[in-house]
Length: 178
Image (cartoon, rainbow, N blue to C red):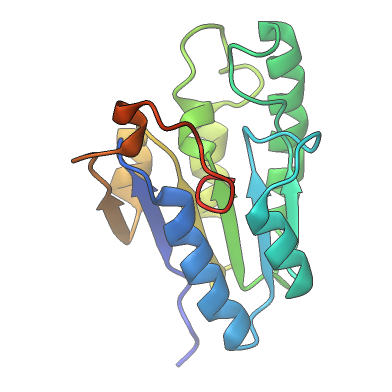
């Protein structure tokens, strides 16, 4: 029986969605699977611990964003999202990929500060996911998962924020957040 590609969604307001996807990535690499990891919001202008580690494991990781929505103009974000979606559509058709991680796609789809449906159309995203190679596993992360993605997924884990050191004024910690 051929392997069925599963669709996993990690969402919620708690810390750990990207971390969960990295755990899946680590297991997949350990089993010899071809993994591609794409980040929708993080910028290639910064360096991230997960990027350093995955490069040592031979995993292609690409930051396609330009940072959080408040760091650049809406048009700059729209251009980045359009380019990211084009690359993602190609990856979703690549039958050599065993596991594709679309980190922060939920965040991108949930943007309401400026229009995005013309550069990252939800209907197109849903269709591309549905039409991916039958054996491709897919992980999508980020807050505010779209209900249509949740309905399509084989697994949805919601990570709650019970307590966080940010509340005590501790900023992002190197090695824990980036």
